[in-house]
Image 1 (cartoon, rainbow, N blue to C red):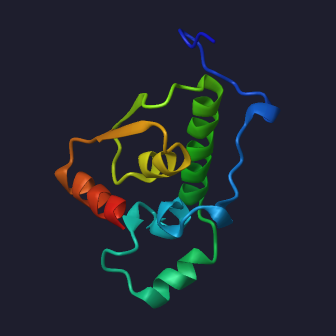
Image 2 (cartoon, one colour):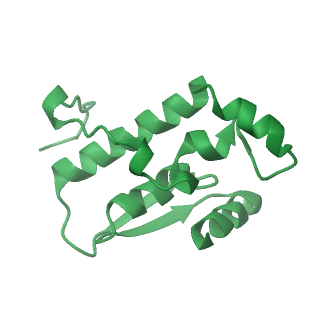
Length: 126
């Protein structure tokens, strides 16, 4: 499989569709984000529950991103202990979910914003 100079398009049967009800809520972008803000940061719990009722476009995109990367990782079938680097990891929506799905791999998150890395560390400890 060569990815040089091309966009990879997965056949439908190769696409990994996650059962989001079986993913820990802390790793589901819909459960932790709304319009780019984490629920923990200054949003009342009542408002959070209202927001969780509707899958917003950003949550849907983040879920699709996780499924796409997970599909490619499954297709590539890296050996145990392989290192996967997430450049521009932000608060970890992608890297934390992938680390959960592929515990045999090592994941490294890199971001230029210290605040994002701090939130990612907090989320990883939960």
